[in-house]
Amino acid sequence: CGIASREAVATGRLLLLSPEEGHLADDVFDPDQSAAALGTLVDHALAEGFDGVRPLGWAADAVEVVGGADALLRLESCGERVSRTRPLSILCVYDRDVFGSDLTAFVTVHPRAVEDRTLAGTEHASGDVVADLGHLAFIDLGGARELLALARHLAHPRALRLLNAPRQLPLLLDVVGWDREANLVVECRRGAP
Image (cartoon, rainbow, N blue to C red; front, side):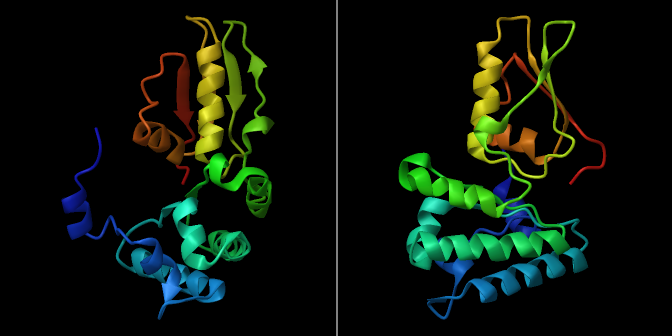
C-alpha cells in the first residue's frame, strides 16, 4: 500500500519540504509570513484544479526550526486562521514524549480538534460501540491511537463503528498501518473534505 510518490511529485499532487523550507523565509521564522505562504499555496492548488491542500508535519522537527514551543504555537494559530477560510486540512503530528504537558496548549488552538480523552460513543444493539464523528473536523495521531485502543479493547465480533468520519481518518489509519484492524469500522461522510 502507499502512493506512487514520483508520479505524485511530478504531477504536483505531492510537495515534499524540509521543516526549514516549510517554515522559514530567508532563514527567518515569521508565523504571519508562513501563514500567507500557506494561503498562497492553497490558492495555487485551487487554480491548478485541486480541491484543497492537506499538509502533514512533524511538530518535533518544526519546533527546533521555528525557535521553540511558543513560536510553534503562534504558527499553529496562524495555520488555524488560514484553514477557516480555505480548503485546508492540516495534520500536525505531536509526540507526547517531546511536548508533554505543553501538548494541551497546542490542542486548544484548534477549536475543532479532538483530544484523545474526549472520545465518546454509544453501545448499539449489536454490541458494537458507535461514535458519530459528523462534527469532527480534525483528529491527530493521538486521537487515532485512542480509537484503535478502544477498538482493540472490544471482544470480537464487537467493533467500534465510526460513522460520518472525515475523509482523512482512513488515510491516516492506512499511513500508520492501522487500517486492517478487524474491530474498527470507519464509514466516511459523503462529500466530506
